[in-house]
Length: 183
Image (tube, rainbow, N blue to C red):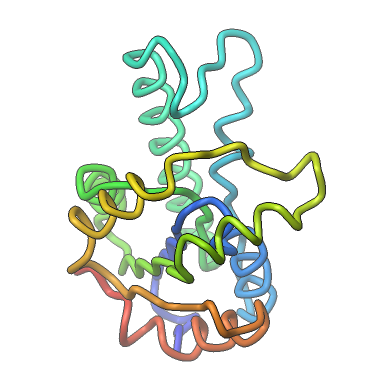
C-alpha cells in the first residue's frame, strides 16, 4: 500500500488512451493527502512559442519536454515537502526521461507505474473520449516497442485491459508501494 507517511512520488505513465488521467485522478482521491500533477497541463503553460513533444523543430520540442519534466519534479518536491503525495500523469517514453525524474527527486521514493492495456484498448479508449480530449496519434506500435525496450525492467507494468478505472486505481493504491519502486 502507498504509505502517506513516506515521501513517495507516484508517476503513472502509458500510451495515449491507457487511462493515465482517469486513474491518476482516482488514485489521488483515494490517498489521504495528495496532489495530481498533469504533465499535459504543465506543458501547456507555455502559450506563445509552444512546441508539442512530437513537434518541430525537434530540438525545441526536446527542450520544452525537459522544461516540463523539471517543472513537474519541482512541483512534486514542493508538494511532498508540504506533506502531500504527488501523483504525476505524464508520458515517459524512455529510460533517459525516467532517470532524469529520479535524479531530480533524490529525496523521494519514486514509484513508477506503466498502464499497459495494449494498443487496441488504447486506440479504442481514445475514440470514446470527448472530442476535445482526443489525441491524434498514430505511433502506438513504435511507442510501445520503445517503452518496452527502454523501460521493460523498470517499475510495474500493469495490464489494465480487463479492469475498470476504479479497480485499477484501487490496485495502484494497494500494490504500487511494493511493485513499482524504481530505487
